[in-house]
Length: 271
Image (cartoon, rainbow, N blue to C red; front, top):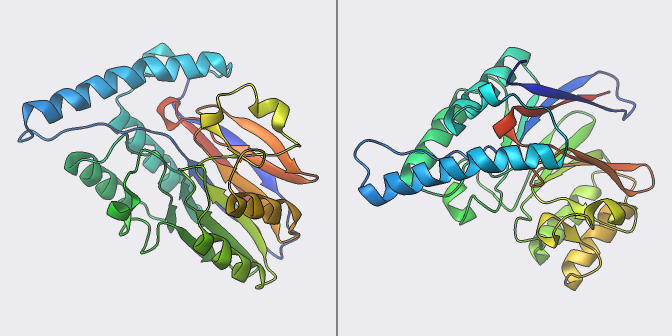
């Protein structure tokens, strides 16, 4: 059994040519450097042990395949995911949050070094474990709150929603992007829960979704806008540590990528 577990997603936008994206999420890298103090080293080791157990629990919960002989250190998981992306040479690599487990100089340095090894353009999105997001501005290419990559016929838009809320400035900028009248693939860390996928997400703790049912007005307006706009074609997210495919509105799919700790990747064909 290979460490990489590839899930193929096809998104039909009626494009004139095909594009390929690679997505991975929730690797929770915890590492340390030799000169770190005892407390930092202990924390990294304890978190590594925690996620060794947690990755198995999530895999069982979502009935996903895993091989106990392939429970790699989190640093090696990220290394293999980067190598997989380079071998596939996609048009864009999506890192959709919680790639490291917490901010430290060692974790950040490992993340930055890993991202520099990518041979393809990338879009890095902060998760709730990349906190505070202001420390990741360089990796987010200048704007962790909202960033987008423009292709000839569509946009890939990332929005930071790890607090399960949307800020007024994000909503305003997103409205402006809709005026481009291009198809949009939206990426966020936390998935959305609406009336169309409520049964699936109600099985999980509320921590794992951004709900239209119990949120502030700005977040509610954003979710309604995403669900009602013809330009938004699909949503890609992580956070759940299990693969979940659902609809947030009629003909509008949301794909949750499972954990990079068990080698899960979404290979996305947009055509």
